[in-house]
Length: 139
Image (cartoon, rainbow, N blue to C red):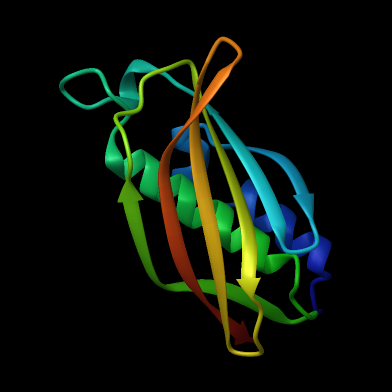
């Protein structure tokens, strides 16, 4: 039985144990867009109290995959082929917000941009930016 695209999007968030362990939550989805949020805990920090680069990279990658998945046809999945992240400033705050948008959709390869903001109270600062290349795989 083939999955619908909405079922695939639910699967991306509900059946990814590492994402659940980190605490990354889906905030919103749109055509070629996805926003996620992570409430920061001590486990997300590196030795000096800043958000670990690996946490930011994982969030950028997973959110980009979900943005790309909003454009899938039934019977397709997404897999990351490559990504590059620029850590723009040290991240310290209450939560991370990742906003990903598809820059170039394709039949086999889709390119997505992810921006991660660190929020403290009502202030958001851009802390990292990633370019993610997504392979579109037909099952």
